Length: 111
Length: 214
Image (tube, rainbow over all chains, first blue to last red; front, side, top):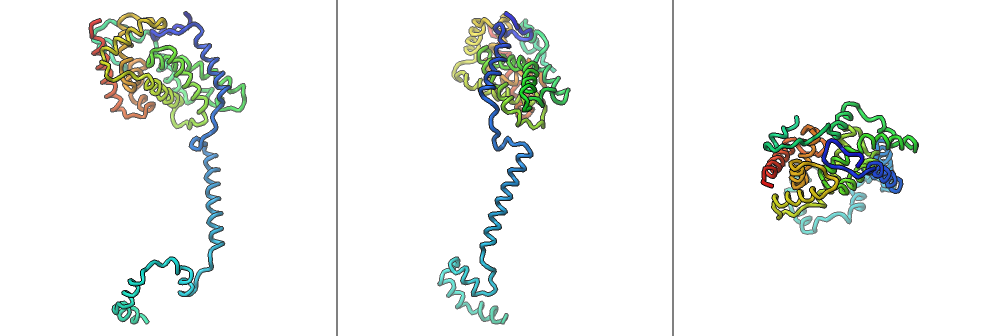
């Protein structure tokens, strides 16, 4: 027996630590360092990833803005653009139109 | 400070740690000096520098990691497998080491997790009594050609082998490796209070098993 540890009652076979070292070296050559995972990036790589996403979002927003319709100057223009998104049922609208308070006291006062 | 073995073992004649503890010594060395010299070389693109770093790492840590695993897993082959896993993981993940902690803490965290995995794989059945588990572990140790201890020491290691994984880790790190609860907390990500409780329960079980008649 060689390589007998003095601090524990556990012994190892002769030459064990040399063999283990060789075995680890061989395994490391066979299994090279794992490809960096996303969460394992260093600071510079994090900046690059962040810059890429900021740039991408900027481009998407820019294209959306460029394609967007000109801002409306009139209520009829707004109605045309948003007609399909109006979801107020007709009966509610009629109720509002019948509401004397709304038309007489508020709207007409403003005119 | 290390608990008094005589007190822990309730008067059983045994000299537990025969010599200096390797793991504790290496950890203290690495805590004293900022980072080991070879650490930077582990990520070098130069093959020769990487080989030197490998040698430096292995010279410092190979035996401490193996004996840490051996104390936990008892069986030589299990300790060999687990310690190889730790060392390979260190080299494969070294680029993720952020230097927010000391290298020794980072390494011991890996070793702790690998040991937990290995112990859980070999988990003993809960319905087997502590005494029977202890007897089985004792028989196993006595048949192990790579285990050389007197009766009292055999009984101590057999008792440790019956502890649940977490208690076993805390007991080994505290009792044999003499690490502070603060250091163990950094390694295990547990609170010092929880670790003290684990150590207390582990010591109680070990003490109870050591006073049982042969």
